Image 1 (tube, helix red, strand yellow):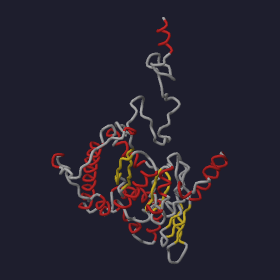
Image 2 (cartoon, rainbow, N blue to C red):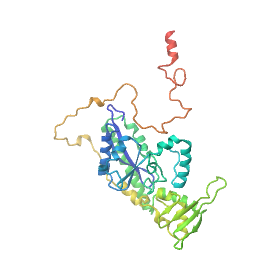
Image 3 (cartoon, one colour):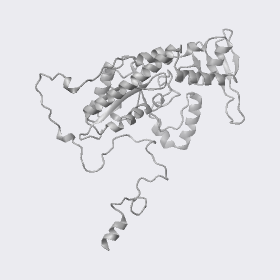
Image 4 (cartoon, rainbow, N blue to C red):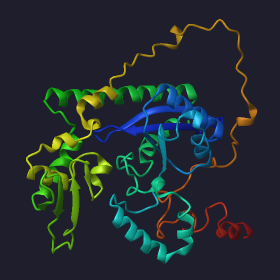
Length: 369
């Protein structure tokens, strides 16, 4: 927050089955402290979701880790599983043996990094070791960053104006997304447009696969991808077990809808592969997520005043220092890095990189003359 008083806006977001950002909760607190995060996570459990097995993705902020470690808040297994945002990793793979091979090569290049990252459980930061697919393919906190950017312009206004703006934007967002789900249901679409697009792409890939059956019950298969000599890709062999809802490539476990290998295996035994799609991708499920009732706020004059006597006393210790630019407490990542060709400072007087007009050497030379 950039207002008169120092404060921090906490945001909890998720994503619906149609790949749309779904805001869950907002809170304005004094700062990212253990007390603030504990209060926020406790109310998130009490008022937003009671579901077990939730995957909580966050950065490795010490206050968040300490708050999650408190079993009384309900964010420990089996109620919830806390994993880390890994935006600094360039590529993700859901296949365990491919990850292990690449990870070993990476560790050979940098023993210090191997010692550091070896202290962090792979279940916390890898897609390949997400055995239950709790991440649904999400490896970063980009969802919160998206909402954070939308509300960036509201950070300079008072808290009352911030709350009204947040309420108004969320109201419009929920109504629009709910209407979209209703339209797709009226058109006879059981599953959302996002997953249907992905399934069409997987069906096209499945046309070039070769399937081999390995049991008389026809539940275990080996699927071989066609090799593309132009791109030098493909040619891999993957094990598929329909009874176990398993594909060795890892994409089915990660995204919870059939990969191309599952699709071609189902086609071999004349099984409808739609039965392997997770319920979160149905339009009925998405519609329920946006079906909450919103009410007009009305005029401020219509608010019934409280009979309890109270006096608003501002805390001078939280007044922001007016001098200089506000110091950022945000954990920086590669989105904040600059290319070597991009300079942070460039003088408007002489055009030299590394200083500004205020401390430009030409200014002192002109003053001495």
